[in-house]
Each structure stands twice: as structure tokens, then as C-alpha cells.
Length: 473
Image 1 (cartoon, rainbow, N blue to C red):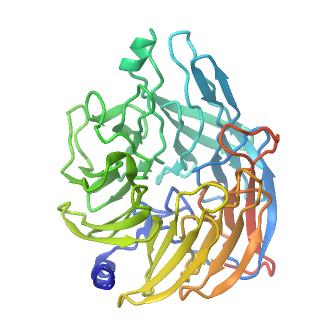
Image 2 (image 1 turned 180 degrees about the horizontal axis):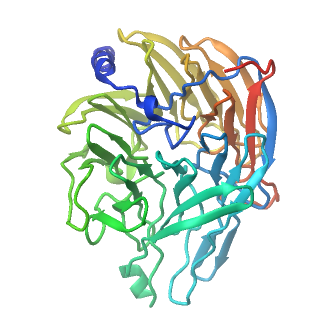
Image 3 (image 1 turned 30 degrees about the horizontal axis):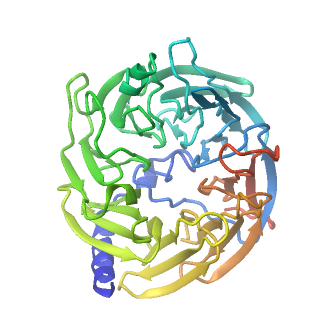
């Protein structure tokens, strides 16, 4: 592992020397999943030194905030999607996930309910919002987000109690399973948070649910019209896409369970397109391996993964121009996130995939010479890592959705020294990553119940965590 780590950090040094500053063109403090087009998860602002929960925003009847991170606009508005209330009726299983806009003081500006499409001919499924909204880089009042029923939405925030639906792109297809039931089924679930390219397209993917397709899409950000779909018909054989796309070097990159694809930006609309290159990993059984995240540094693509077969994880280093594998680094747990800093550090968060009691996690900090600076182990699952401008680390332990044990937030220095924590929340946290706003405050959503089992009647909350000294970031 030592040689592998030295190889990794050597290439990180090269990549960092040619990486442009992705944040230079960002007008909003946290405009999309992963913060920027390369998914670096690094803010331009300093986080709290002495933390205090300033505000809690209750989202009544929405059950869970799951996967959806919180996007932050240039005026400080928070945008977040919810799981919604769940319903089961015959063959239909669906949720009414909603999109919220919340001002910087914690007041709800508006709530959008996309509703359930039911014309009598469509099998209803999966109305959760589990994607982080993306802001339009040309107009941060415009947001894009996907829903579990296979629809991609574009809204414009016009202020308090005022928004408009610009367009809705519906991926519903006449699937084989839907025909077997005598009616079309909703499009595949959208778990990938959309990314807006410099070519004016919104990139996203649907992932396979029973009877639906797995496919990658590019739609025009202004009109919502389809530019291209891959594959043009049918479904990708590797049947899950849960990672968020990254953009850079003239490409948009996606990962499925076992494949990574690079597509050219500015491809002509209306003409069948395909990847410029494809990387395939076939050394483990399909049902036990999957990619969990992508991050781009210069001409190196870093792909996290989890292996349920071996109970381990890997970081893949891929040449972002050619798709050639440069190295695979193995770890002893599934890799939740691998974040590359600019101050001589590589940060890896890992968790096993236990549930409830017995789940464990680890934070691993390396330097560019391959030295393991510190490893910190936890008796709980650990989140994706967020960095502030000084590369202070922010993460949370998830708690337990079965028992209601609350999640807790921690901060460490780049050397792995505890700055503060635990700061306990009111409820568990599922997989909603931490964002940092323009005042240096942490923003996170919780999950008071588990998936569709919300019998306790609790509502999820958004937490705004600031500095007790109210210092300038």
C-alpha cells in the first residue's frame, strides 16, 4: 500500500500544478453537489471555530432529507429537496418529495410540490428528491434538480412566495416491465445530482429501478429539450448510476456500478453520441462492487468505490484524457469520499456498510510524500468530507435511524487534530453532505426516521451551524 500511496500523491502534485482554480468563476458559495464542476468539496470560506447551532428549520411532513445536499445561492438562499411522505397503493409506490427555498436567516421562502403524474396510464413510482440542486452559472436564481420519478426540473426563484417552473423534462419510456403491467412506468430514478456545463447543457442520469432504464442525458438548460441520450435506446448494461458527474478538460464524466465514461462537451444535438472513452472494472462480481464518487484534479480522475464482496474500498486513479488506469489503491473499508487539498494533504473517509449497531467509519489523512499522518476510527458511519478555505475538515457521524440516536458533527485540522466536536443534532443524518455558506456557516439536513418507516411522526430539519463569536469568515 505504501508504494501505491506514493504513486497517488506524486500524481496529485503534478495535477495540482496544472489545475485551474475552479472556484474563480463561482458566484455562489455552494452552487452544486461537490461545490464546483470538479467536485472538490472545498469552500472559499472559513468554517466556525467555536460552533453553535444558530437556527433549525423544520420541514413539516417531509420525513427524510436523504442524499440531497444543500445548495447555497449568491444571496444566501438555501435550496434543498426532501424524501417526502411515502404512499403504497397496489402496484404504485411513491413519495411526494418537495423542493424548498430557505433564506439565510432560516425562513422558508417557498416550497414547490411537483406532484404525482397520474393520467391513469402511468405506473407511479419514486417521488423522492435525492439530488442536490444545481444553480445556473449565468443566473444563480435558476435551479435544476432531479426527482425519483424520472423527471428533471428547472425552477426560477423570484423571491418570497414567488417562483416559476421554467420546464420539466420527463424520462418516461415505454419499458418492458410497464408493458407487462399494461401501462408505461415512470422513468428510472434520478440519483445523480445534475451538473451544468459551459456548453449550456444540463447533464444527469437515470438509474435502474424495476422495469426502467439506466441512461445518461444532456438537455438544453434554457428550453429543457433533449440534446442527446446514451444509449440512444434501451439501457446501459451496468445498471446503476449513483455518482455525481464531474466536468473538466472538455469532458463530462459519469460512473456506473463498474464503468466510467467520458463524453465530449459541445457535442451536436440530435445526433447519436457515445463516450470518447470507457473504463471498465471487471475484477469483482457485479452485485458486490460499485463506484461511490468522482473527483477531478487536473488530468487525473479519482474514483471512489465500495466492495461489499471484500468489505473494502478502492480509489482509482484514471488518466482523464485517455481513460487509462494509472493505479488502484485499496483500503480496508468502503471509500465514501477522497478529497485532495491544496496544502499537502489527501483526505479519505471510509465506512463499512453495516446498518444500525456495529457500523464503523474512519478518517485517513495522508501527505504528498505518502506518509500516513493520522488515522481516526469511529464507532459509527462517517460522512463525505467537506473542506473550508484553510483545509479544516468537517464531517459527521450518522447516528442510528433505528434507535433515533442523533448524528454529531466534528471538525479536524488538516493534520488530524480535533478542533471541536461532537456537536450533537436532534436526529440521525443519513447521507446529506455538509455545505458551507458565504458567512462560513455549516448547513446540513437530518433524517429522523428510516426510509419509508416514519411512524414516529417526526419532521426533518435543516441546521445552520455558525461561530458563537459571530466573527467574519
